Image 1: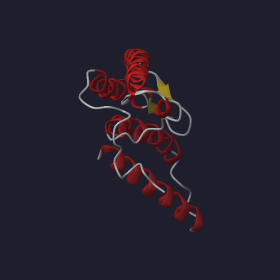
Image 2 (image 1 turned 45 degrees about the vertical axis):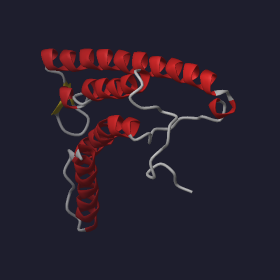
Image 3 (image 1 turned 135 degrees about the vertical axis):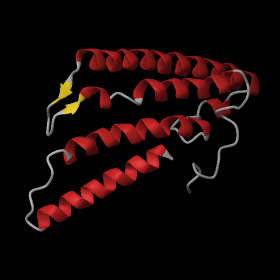
Amino acid sequence: MASGVVIFIVFALIVADVFMRLLGIPPWTYIAAIVEYGLLWFTMLAAPWLVRVKGHVFIDAITVMLPPGAQRVLAKVAYILCICTTLMMAYYTFGLLVEAISEGQIDTRGEDMMLWTLPLPLPFCFAMVAIEFIRYLIGIDSMYGSRTDAKESV
């Protein structure tokens, strides 16, 4: 839901920027920065949901040729790697967020903006992605189970 709101705001800002240029009105200087931030925000806000509904990209060409026991072992290894990676990213992005807040860093590209607004969703979304992979690891669901219709586009 939040990702959809951010996508709509980015869309509206791009349309406003284009129309302002067509009408000869100088566009707002902060539009480019907000659109750049929005790209990161809607990607991260959608990531936990994509893992939940198995909409993320993964290649199962090798695993489908393995026997079921080997598939389960390989899946557990993949889950552990994904959990470790996303928790590490959550840790480091949380550090970036704390540093930006504590030092009062400012992003000065188009318009002065507080830098902490850029990494704000990162640690929380990476942590939620890790939780989704933990669900797979403990057996609540399987990444290699049936996929939803949203991902099967033929």
